[in-house]
Image 1 (spheres, rainbow, N blue to C red):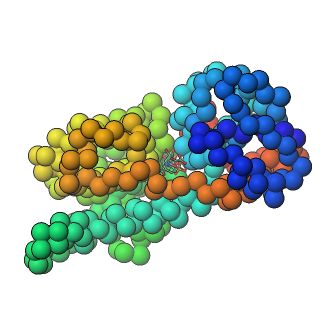
Image 2 (image 1 turned 45 degrees about the horizontal axis):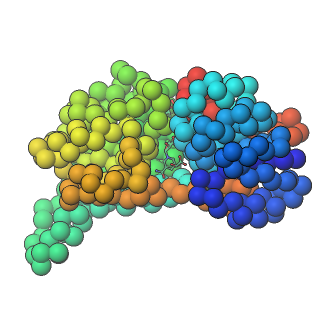
Image 3 (image 1 turned 90 degrees about the vertical axis):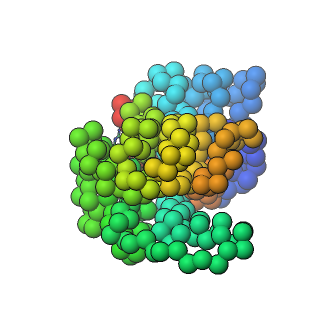
Length: 310
Ligand code: NAP
Ligand code: GLV
């Protein structure tokens, strides 16, 4: 069995080492621009370049070493529809998202962001506490990661709400779905957490109109994709005070350019796309198990629905 491997960072050796543990029979072909590779059975990629399409079109399945598949689906039918694209299902990412979002929510609820600023100015000044009933958390996207985040927030007693495409029932979470449910969902969410996949329907969803529906003094946490958020709209709503602050892990251009105005806005907390990192060992183990199943003709989880776009 031959596996075609592409890593944008060029660090393929540790991946091969881990694959050798879980799939010792596999041989590896490292993809390099301008070199023809031997035919392979499977491809394991993250954000592959367009030049890789001829090879990707010929494998039995493509494994995406992340949860979001927007970087693959942008190629449309240049990746033939009969080549399954298989995303990671959790593989250690859900707990990281739970940590990141819980930390960010508690930081705003307990006003630690304001205390950090006060401490830098040597100011000792207790602030009035936020009240939990006025602090509903709304999670856009209740998939693998969104549901884990809601589970992690539950013990703190915040009112919880979630929005998905199809109807869902999660105990303790007020669930909304579809275009009809979005308005009510937004109007009652003091903290908006974006955990959606990037698709034509969700692109730019967090724009001036939708952020304008959040209660005054709302908070934004975006851990999904930069293109979900209309960046200039966020800046102007922060300046007007409608949005109190934002924590952003993802951006339209990554790395965030040095001259981007977000760097100068103290109410925006920036992290470099680290909210849920791909854990190599867990990912390789999961991919190896799926390859074994495919080889036996058994069904595997996490195949992307090309029509839905995630
Ligand atoms: P998932 O399991 O596919 O869940 C996606 C959720 O979004 C589902 O609840 C789905 O609704 C909902 N959704 C999709 N399109 C929608 C629409 N048009 N309207 C309303 N709801 C919609 O995805 P996941 O594993 O939770 O991952 C979510 C995203 O997180 C990824 O796509 C990726 O972009 C991002 N991510 C970021 C990082 C990072 O480090 N920043 C790491 C990992 C993932 P249904 O339940 O009805 O299908
Ligand atoms: C990271 O952004 C992922 O989609 O896994």
